[in-house]
Amino acid sequence: MTWPNFISLGRLFTTPILIWLLLSGRTVAAFYVFILAGLSDILDGILARALKDHSIIGSYLDPIADKCLLTGAFIALGVKGLIPIWLIIFVTFRDAMIVGGAILLILLEKKLQVQPLLISKLNTLLQILLVVYVMGERVWSFNFPYMLESLTSLTALTTFISGAGYVVLWVKIMKKDSLS
Image (cartoon, rainbow, N blue to C red; front, side, top):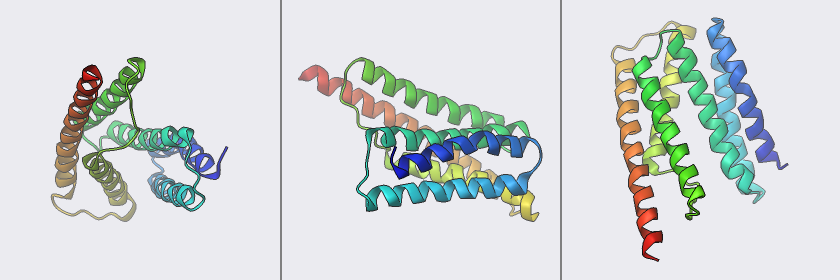
């Protein structure tokens, strides 16, 4: 196993720890675990590029670790009533749709590259900012009016647009291969 993959695997294993910390009210510790996990995502990317160590396993493991961490944080914060349940359902549905679509394309033996759309990257950034803001509110007792609503709305909007973007991409892949 390569170092970048090992780091991604470590991030995946922090997910249950993060969930437990959030659900047990240890928000300060959860905040720092989340930040460290985010830094590990940056580190594994830097290492993979520096070592020219790109692997098929890594192309799947890295986004899976990211999604598990974010989804776990969203669900735990939703259980605590800190993120709206409707947003968690919306984001989780989109993620399940993306995974389901990818699996379908693989089963149909279509050419599939694991490459996120630009809007999907923005969506992930907004999800991260939302989690950091919600935990940060509890850690430092700050409250910026309308910040939670703004991050929630922008996350919902980019979730919808990126979900639609993947559907358009899949339709193009299906049409392209059927014309060949």
